[in-house]
Image (cartoon, rainbow, N blue to C red; front, side, top):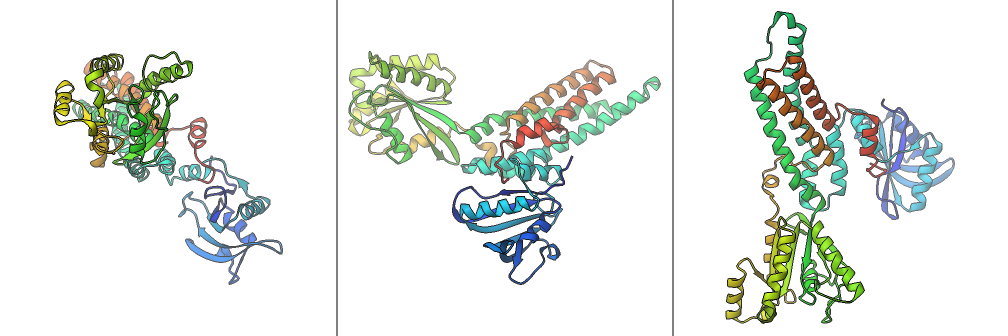
Length: 462
């Protein structure tokens, strides 16, 4: 049910600033706005054209609250599809509060989280996946996540799903028609064409499902654990990567007793670096807790960077190999980057020996920032950005991923039914369930609980 009341909220971040934007949407939005606005040219807002700007003052009876600029957007040609006005006022928190309180007294109510975008969905301005992309766009903090959110907001993902759903719906109608003429034993749906369609749908669904691995990484970042013995330069490496003194650096072994995390964008992808406590045998209770946390962080990380002091390889090479094998055996599926730090202290023959002993080694000097760019490039190589470069649809939303998995399962059931000559009524049930899952993604099938869960994660003014 589409609400008819008018809602108000601050559309810009809370707090003081140069300007603030207060948004009103609803059937009476322009009338309410006009009741508190006095134009410098005595304009009546209710008679003005859509998409126009008007300078004047917000008045509380005879009291002037602020000089403002009012934007008018008449439905259905607005973000929400309803009459909407936006009041650009000075960014004082006092002024913001006074104007919002005045509008509440004039008949508005405070908007719920995401209610402006919810109304855009209910009024057909966006489908559900596009509405969810709005939240992703707001929270995007790197180039890749921004690019995906923009593509989805423009309807790239929606169009792909809608096209599959429409084709499947056409065949579903023919199957239903066959059920109406079951006694005549006729076939309206060409089984060969239907099988080709199911193969095509299955292929697209598998591609979208596979893209979630990349999409999830792009949306949430890649956790990278930096591990190794104490005093090999883990904190120095973190500082070099971030280009700031984020972690304490000391000659004293065991300085880092807890994990330190920070984020860096490399090639448009976010990497969350975790500087862990050094791995060694110790009787220090606090340090032991830090080492235990190190292995917990390795478990959570997608990539492990193992750092050692290359200048000490002659002395501790055997011990190092034992530690490497331990991590490889304990975490066999995790990409492992082996880095020899302090390479600026090595002679040419020592470098050659190291590379022959550990062919995959990357030699760097974190202190001198040598080889740090090579490390960044190697980390980026773990992310399959091909789909992103080719502007393919990438799934980032867990809810969409779940619906795609269920839709694929139903499509495979339909294929099996065709291959085993299952009765049309049973095939029709599986088709309906697949259509339902497609509809769940775009919002053609929905319920209040689902919408509540989705829009509760939005900010108030959106």
